[in-house]
Image 1 (cartoon, rainbow, N blue to C red):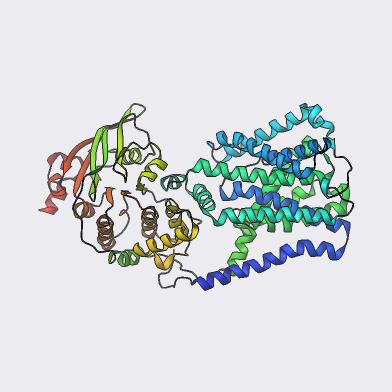
Image 2 (image 1 turned 90 degrees about the vertical axis):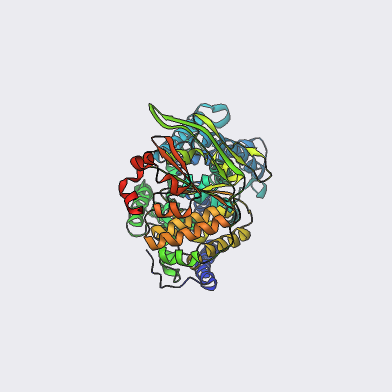
Length: 603
């Protein structure tokens, strides 16, 4: 949690922090070229070429495994495809520069075909599925002897020159390896700093919240794996030329896949330059041990990686980049007080309320069963423009199920949800993305922040739904944060906010999408009475801006103050609806939900 007395970070301080990181990284990159040239030793050249190759492979893997959070342990599939395509075409007299692109194209197709069904799996099941596909490719390479040489493998023709990527000197090979490293780093940096990168991290952190923000989670993951596969195939083609010999066990190796993932984990998973740091640390140790100890060091690299990984997990859980960030971190806002936020937001955006307009959403005859349980039974209502509709009922009444159906997260067994589009036409959205596109935004009962992102970046994910340009989205995020009272904490990580701050952040992220309908799921739960009153004022200001609101709420003070109409659910059925003060006097409602104590208190 953070201390509200601290000040927000200045842009100049953030810029200085970036410079403190960029300078050492620039030195590392320059050293990869200058040290082997200055030393002039062939073995030193080999070590630095290997660093560049594995740093590039790990950076390419990190686009999927780090940014998107998909722990692929079968990534050597694309490395092997690139290697075999390049060598086979070279044996046909085609330059590996062309074979490199051919291998990348095949790898992209294979990646999409493999990944699409695998993305339905989560956690260890996804990783196991990728290992299974890797084994399939290894077996195929063993059996297609006419094409791949089978277990015997393939040698590359000894044709010297840039056209064939084969050289007597090491310097040209170092230049190519370094160029591939720069390419993968540039692509990774571009992805992470643009909308795709924000979407990938959002999908990794909270897939349901990303869906609610209009992110096509499967689409962006497929794009990430396609880019990653192409880059991996590029490096695979060059590495085959460098090795001069390939065979299935080495090209489609589980050990290779684990190795490139290990560099990213040790360097800093999900960071742009973490895989480079991991390779710079581990490759020299492993290669020097092999060079010095020869056959005695067989398998030593696995021991080295294991020891380093154990130390990183114990002392640097965010990897080497996390350690660097700790030393370069500027003084930032250390927390959010829900009451302070509410206070600053509640005083803004006071405006004259427009009259309630015509219907903007129609919910008709919703039915939903979970096995033998009838969760919603013929639920129907309308929402009008500029209206706040309260949805109340005891726990287990079916409120969240209704919310999930009117936001696309759950398909009803029967019934319909139609929404009036901006052009006046009535549409029937089906998926969360469809609802977001038509202007329906929602929050969640259990807050779902993108914890690894800052407050600003969280809100930008919502803004990207309307604005593709990063700077436009950033400006919208800052404006929205100011309205929501989050302005001073833009650069604080979401994981450091209190529950009140997280709830307000979630509302801010939805409001950055410019919704016409806002679905609020218990946004006032867990905050004190003073904050409830301030939050009520904020909800009214949102309503006065023309946004229609459906709110699930248990805080009766909020329901009575905010709602123009109230619907009461019990056991999946609507048992009452109308003006709040009339509904709470209904004996059926009192018995089912409010209790006699509430009526006595009101009297």
